[in-house]
Length: 300
Image (cartoon, rainbow, N blue to C red):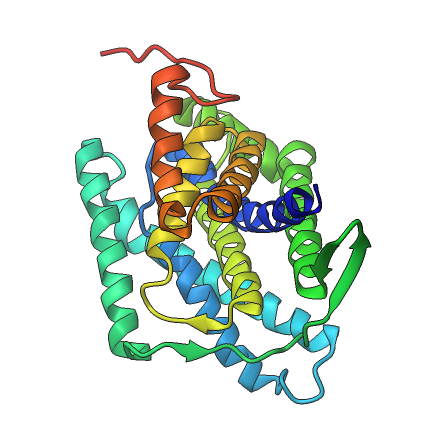
């Protein structure tokens, strides 16, 4: 029983990270019906920005929560700016083109960020400084959680609640909902569709960057191709929950994290990555719209 509870704690921790990345996928899809395959690479950039921000703020010297918060916020803000640039330069010009053009553009941006990262940061892994020293906390029944895992869970939960509040209880959030339903109708109501789309990319990129810093906090080895597999898994999580649905992305991320850790703990680490695609196949066969998704008939 204690082993199961321990694996559950670990799974929920990883799942919260997947949920943060999946939120970016699901928001962009909800607004544009576009799968932003470069999103996992923004997660990678967030980790590297956090690495350099740690040096700027000397966060590893006499580490404290304030310095760690500054590192996190810097990574989120700069990554939000990167998201804005990507949307303006890459996606906006092909917005009215066939969907295949936008898809190919997304793949191209992903390859550009990955290879640009290799040129800029180098192919060798970098060590993320311990801006929050690790120590374990006993939860009883043989279950242990580290303070870093607590931080990951707390920050992820705070960001998810913040996003939910933004979408449901602010003017810009209501504008996002309107644009996701119908671009033309939203424009006729006086909403700047272009601004809302850019804002959505910025929010999604900031969440991905936060996930990158939180993962680097626990697994301090970062490298330019680190976003490929988490990006794919987060995409599967978004599809699992119902892509375009924010609560669905959160649930999908948690399911993905728990399933991955359970497979690793009880079967073999060899199947750690395979479980994502097994879940994708199952959900497409059983419920193609996802757990919270609704089947929509497209007009041809």
